[in-house]
Image (tube, rainbow, N blue to C red):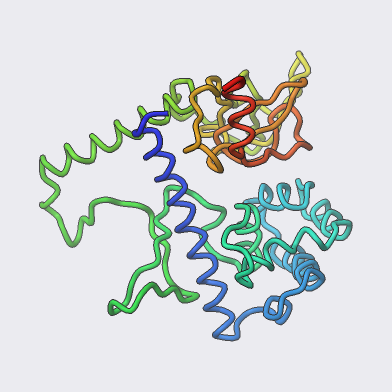
Length: 297
């Protein structure tokens, strides 16, 4: 993997790191201000399970369905989620508790998304269109209160700098964009497609086509292909890596893998296997990359 691709992956990981920091800072701020549910202060797995049930009952929203489906392994509507929460093993909450208690430095992205849902952090789930960086105040370090705004990423402030985005800045921005596109192309082994057209209407769905999702209606397909609810992020960014030999040590923890038809496959994002939905993709370790991307070395 070349340096441009490594840089682009670091940028993407760094952006989710900003989201993670903002979510945890939001949690700590609400905890300090005593605006959290009592079940979210002195955390235990049983309390988190009870709070999940309360939150699902009181403010279920379909925008959170992917998070709930990924964490509780079932989703689709409020009643299904409530049943999944009721049946889940409380041990699934321990990684989040260990992270918030400082016993571990990192945790899986889905645990951060669950925390964002529980504390009503917005905007969620993570979206790279937003700038989640915590602003510094008075040089004393980052702060983030419950009302701190998350703004869409905009490299130009049209109010403060109406005429200062000149030719030089434009060339620099274009160079960065081109470098990121090139990096993504060589890292995934295929050209990154432009955003797919999203069907309109309430029944928009998508199906898996070799190495990416394609939009479609929600009618059953004649060939029996699995059709699922449309997710714009997955539609435009979730890819099977067709050139796994391009993955290196720099890819550890930044790509995901799953097994299908007795073969190991690598993907650009987390979630469920596109052809085996109950199977949750796992982060790629150095061992997996060496064994399946560079066998015999």
